Image (cartoon, rainbow, N blue to C red; front, side, top):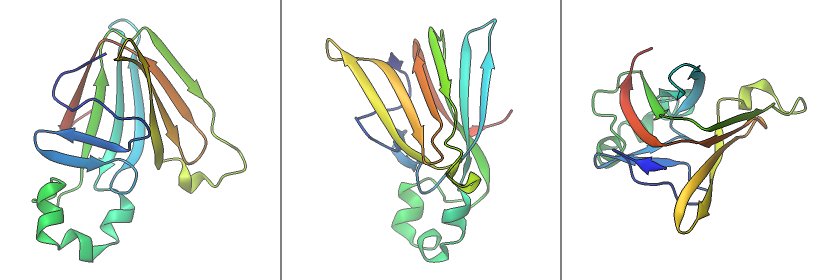
Length: 147
């Protein structure tokens, strides 16, 4: 996997680091969409940014260093996305029916599988139990995504 405009993920991370900013996909964003184009083999994972949890924490949103580091300067609601090109494996495991639906948009972790010190697979695990497993070519990040 080639990371074009973001730092490669570390094991059990929940952060995207891109262009000097840090995007916390666990606390500060709500997962809202999976888009897969079969013909182009392009997968897009979309989050609302900032997410509801962060919007309800006015002390954090008003803290100058936090706002700058997390790309919240204009304090507007927008979408951010991870875009995977030339997807060779896409597997989505269902959510856990025992967990409240309110947990489905919260990322628990990103698991990284490496081979010869290269990342060859990512698994996004959500608090609601859903898992998305991906093998792909280039990965990019869009901090102002529109569907």
